[in-house]
Image (cartoon, rainbow, N blue to C red):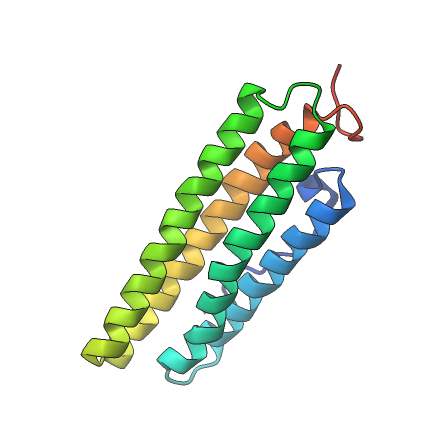
Amino acid sequence: MGLPRFVWQRAYETGIPEVDMQHRMLFDAINRLADILESGSTISLRDLNGSLAFLKYYAEWHFQREERIFEKRADDPKHPLLCANRRAHARFNSLAQEWYRRFLAMQRDGASPVQVRQFAQDLYYELIDWVENHVLQVDRRAAAVCAHCPLHQS
């Protein structure tokens, strides 16, 4: 299948080590999901349970910490870029909850292997899109408004 893997690059850095370390955790989770998809075997709901549990936890844990860090470092905690970051996080939290609801429905309804694989692929590509559009764009711009951040542009 040849799914792309995320290899950490300087281009992904926010300039805030704690945030960057947490983003690397997300990269690892996406790469594990790619490994599951490429394993060649039937994907079970059990295989996906760990990925979904991590995403649900990560969304709450990481977003709270990142927002707090950005707000503490910013000259203006109400800066439009920080507000945009919070809104993006809220959208991702909603997506993560929807993924989990779909997962539970598949468990309840006895999803076929084809349905489980399609769900895993959809999840993988949505996560790829999130990283490319959020980490590379929204997070980096939000970090740039932080006074004590190496990316600060004043």
